[in-house]
Length: 355
Image (cartoon, rainbow, N blue to C red):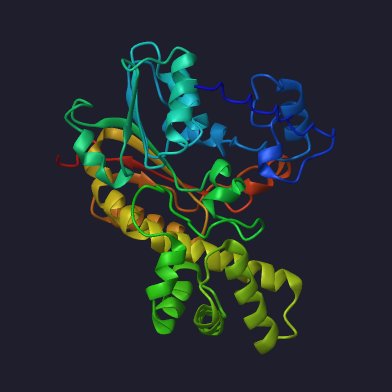
């Protein structure tokens, strides 16, 4: 028996002192506990450090939900845990928070961070599940929640990691699944969807004005070779727009790319159907006088929330709802440009509504 030859030492790529372009080279950003000073510098520049997420409209959400010690709350999207942490600070002592997520990649990391900060299962209950199943937690929660938060945005950790395939800005597998362990990826979806169905998805999910044109371009590219990566999809969309709409500005092309990726993400994850089920269950999961806040990031989500809240107010289920959405402050939009498109709506459960 011979000894195995020692593996050669592989030196880590040194941090150049500038902002690295590749996600896997941003090891300082990916280790915020060790490189706190660098993280602060990146945030001060209006950027989000790789592998992290900056919660949006924190002050506005806390003002709406007004969580108090001893109350029970629900966070529909655990994400990086930013909103969760702020809610817990207000709920303790004596309160509990239930937080759910479907992202099997990021959820264990977030849970480990929050547990390390001292939030045990007695005060923070974390479940791997879609927020549409909120009613399944009512028994464990004592029959209802005092406040409910749903931040419907995609986390920066998901957007920035090319391996998740959420953005056209970096090449990676065309996945787009919030839970990469479940369902078909966007690449698999594109193999089977018809051109007509794809056009309808682009229009209904993202209000894409060039839906038919883009669908034709993507299916034409698919016929030549499989569209497997984010770069493949982006190239097909750009080529189709350039051929049919040569006078489109770079900004218009960029907007179509963003909308197309968003529309596919919504379809692959069944996001609208999950939101519709959640909105239907929401009032019956709130205690009398309970408060709900929903943070949306595009018109398709906001329309659904607005319609459900107004309908609930008309039927007497909600005693009051926001007539217009709150927006991030100008200071927050400057500090965190990713907050710019956010809209925050709220509703209060009627004291008289029958359970």
